[in-house]
Length: 464
Image 1 (cartoon, rainbow, N blue to C red):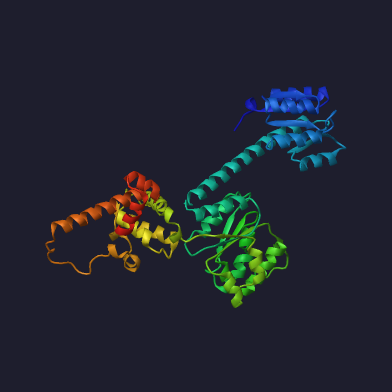
Image 2 (image 1 turned 90 degrees about the horizontal axis):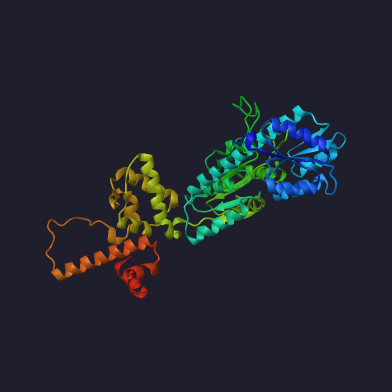
């Protein structure tokens, strides 16, 4: 935090006596003080000395105080401006506040009031800086949990960058485990509401008779067991964001009430009489087809259109092949830290399995697979550390273990053995270089000093 010795004050007033008094008082407090006697001089001085706060008289010769304020705020958005106004000019002072002034002081000046206003202004500025810092940290924290590089996810993130700062309702669609809640957190963290709560509710996890009270709250005596009043998720999210996960499972009776709350921006608690104003941004998510629900009569069309101001379609993991290595590296580091282990990497055949596997549980399933593997492995994760059911369900045929072992291997011709070893070496080398280039085949062919067509044929021949 800056101190009076480093804080600069600019006084813009056409009365030399006022300038002299304010400068004397503030200089004795340790501030560096500059003065200007008209609006044009004040704006020039603001550009040259870069003050931390400006005392600005409203009635100035030439350019009046309101116009000076307007220009100062255009050029220095965060600049603190305290208005000096005559006692009978409160209306103009209020207009100045709407233009971005921090506060106003009536003339004749009260020195104590001026010093208190000054200290409060700097304290408010410090708190705003701290809030901005926390918002940045929240944004970084949420961003670090999102891993993407494929074009499909980049398109999603491009849309988010455009809409996050606007209060529009967003419907996030995608299979289970694709990261819908992470996307909701990211949108909230990059919105003007980031310093307020993000409240989530899973519409599929609550019994139907509890959904209404959880969303809208209840008053004491509203039902058996309601011994006290309780705010709902909408009230808890006041000023922030409410995330409605699995919105497709919301009972129809609650859909009607939700639509009314979204349209009117007010609600009544269960058993309550008074209406409560709400200021909440709504994000919703679903892994089912709401269109199918409308066709079957289980989801209201009017609520669908109210929620569907913007849609984000998250691609499943099987369509994000470029990200498998990034995600693997991310989860390895994460679980090594969590379990205090030093698992270095996954074996090539494991990465090969990851590329062939369908990932029905998407990123969430991959996270659980690697969590289990890190717990069990020492040094390198091999196929033996992966869940047996997943291996048996979709493991490539070339990776399957033999149904039984021969008691003694048969003697094979040397030429056949050499051919097999050559194939194995070629496969491992090509796979390793493909991993290092993130499956950039042009770059891989260049590093291996073969042409692209040869690489393509080798990959097909070797089952890569």
